[in-house]
Amino acid sequence: MKSELAKLRIKDASLSLAEGKVTSVDLTEACLAEIKSQNGEINAYLNIDEGAIRMAKEADARISKGQRLGDLDGIPLALKDNLSTRGQKTTAASKILENYVAPYDATVVKKLRESGAVFLGKTNMDEFAMGSSTESSYFGVTRNPWDKERVPGGSSGGSAAAVAGDMCLGALGSDTGGSIRQPAAFCGIVGLKPTYGTVSRYGLLAMASSLDQIGPLAKTVEDAEVIFEAISGKDGMDATSTDYIYKSEASDDLKGVKIGIPKEFFEDGLDNKIRSQIEKAIEQMKLAGAKFKEVSLPHTKYALATYYIIMPAEVSSNLARYDGIKYGLSEEGDNLLEVYLNTRAEGFGPEAKRRVMLGSYVLSAGYYEAYYKKAQQVRTLVKKDYGEVWKSVDALITPVTPSLPFKIGEKTADPLEMYMSDVMTVPINIAGVPALAMPCGVVDKLPVGVQFIGKPFDEGKLFQIGRVYEKLRGELKK
Amino acid sequence: MKLTKTEVEHIAKLARVKISQEENEKYSEQLSEILNYVGQLEELDTNSIPPTARVSEGVNVWREDKVVQSEIKRDELLKNAPSEFDGYVKVKAVLE
Image (cartoon, rainbow over the protein chains, first blue to last red):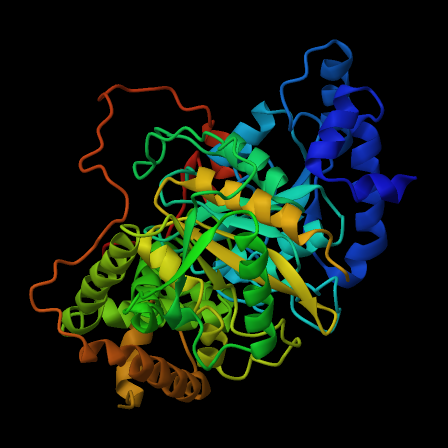
């Protein structure tokens, strides 16, 4: 009985809670039991929230008094460990923050608390969100519940594995170049990277401030929608957040929806098994009235290069604060400079060091124009491509990754090879548009994801497309 | 292009990260490979293209210049400090 509760979707669990068929303590205990049985091997969670049962009891008290706060009240969720949680360790999976206890809640955490959600714990990730496999975590890799020899994707691999393994009913992740969408695809679940500015970044341990966004990972499209609604909206603490109130599209078909197929995402490098799953999805969606046409995003191939200049540059700036002075690891030194040099040498892993150095270089005197300024100009071109395409279509359909989930250790020898797995997700962050990743099939017992890209602030359309397609697709056969 | 040992030393210093000789060699190779890859942006003519610094709207987002009491107390913040003295964070000499 208990593990059946852990398998529930948020929508169904919410209904059962409202009808008094199940309690939040039941749901929370079921998830905690799953964590106990699986986490030793999967390593999705870094820390379990000791207050989880207490939060569940508080939710049950509200529900029994008829004062349920909403769809998320009493629902157990997981949080990526780069989200500040007051009074709890927030490590960003780095040695440099191994014992750092956040003195405040991130805005999204605060919003979820106010919605009554129960927090199960903090999940594993690539160190400072730098990676596509969760292999760069200081606390060990997370394994993919579909095949434990394979990666769950990254950097939100812990959150994705927790959802896919039924160790929570939903989770939050963050996405700078694909870090929600790629693990969602690798773990056979749903993930949304919202339009830049719709979700406050206050309290997110920043990686690249012009690219970072927080978003939901969930078992179904509707579940992701419920979480997104709860966490989105303008926040005075984040100067880049926009006046945004999410409104769901009521439609349950795709009549009149025009979807573009950008040819640059379907070139030779794409695994044919993934290609055929996407083609199948297109055929299914036509039955619901969607119209498809080929479009072009000519600067797609330059988006990855642009990203690997802009992102490290912003990273080098954002990680400058980890200096052994106010918080975090602090190493001894003869003078102030030595404290910085030794602390960061000891505290950062190789990927973090690579990116901080790369960023410092592309921003340095003599190189700023050739690299950083150039990348910002190409960014304008990438953004323009999307602006053009919205003149004739409402959304785009693409794969999420060029290949199936790879084996642990397969891509760690060559950093550039690892970076290439982001080729289909990165352009979306560069352009600032929203994108939804969801499962579209199973190949060789591994999940395949499809990505829907939307116009800025048009999450409504994305969720509509996702909901309708999910119904057409039916249950995934594992 | 290949970064020289001296260039990597300089970059590491800018990044305030101490690296060993061995690491210098390893990072020199890896960083050079990445820089060569990103160098392909040279292929594009960006002469009259303005740089994008931000993807959301809003320039000069203001708030009222009003002092608001912080929710976070000093001792909670100091708990994370590696070295503390009399309510201050203790650091090495900044000026000589």
